[in-house]
Length: 288
Image (cartoon, rainbow, N blue to C red; front, top):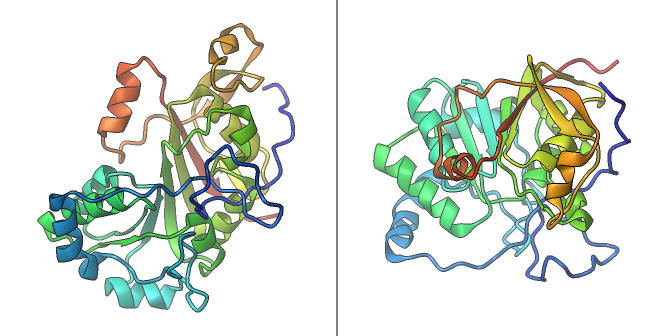
């Protein structure tokens, strides 16, 4: 495999503002992996929120527009045991969207606990609706900044982390906003049990290259993919992605499609558009 350029410097994901995504960052502000957009809930989703939020939605947010975690909160093994009522392994999905995947996984694996992290109100409400209709007991939802939550997670508390089809931030100047970054990887590594995995999937070729650049040479992680993907060795931005086909390519190890991921409407749209799905499995190994 051809040597890659050093990854971009760590960028902290997920603390939302209502400023446009193109606005210049204030020097003391965190770099965000999403922009918080207000969205009104329709009658059905509002009813789901009213009916199920007390059951499924964790009260761990600081209550500000940035979705920070409360200063007094830590995601500890004791908190997990008391919240879920058992010592079953916990899987955390970052960016659950409409909740299709995480709810299906929770229904299929009642002996595993699931935590859905989502920032957008309609996505949270739809996840509440899906979980509530099935009366699931092994899932909870947190509407918080994922990167901040992993900073306050007790080491070894989580079995797996899933990040499926994160926002690609296609403009080159926004690539630093992509959620897969060294700082988050370090915090996830600490949060995982020994041998735990971080599963990632994207249908954006340039994002796949970004994942390899960040993760493949990062201490404490082993790419356990067994198939080969050919990717361009230079980044492209929104509007010139067609140039990638003529760039030098190299082979990278990736994974077979994760059998535990249901085919959501979002993934189906990508496939229908002719995009290739890139799956990654990174195992947390001991730091040297």
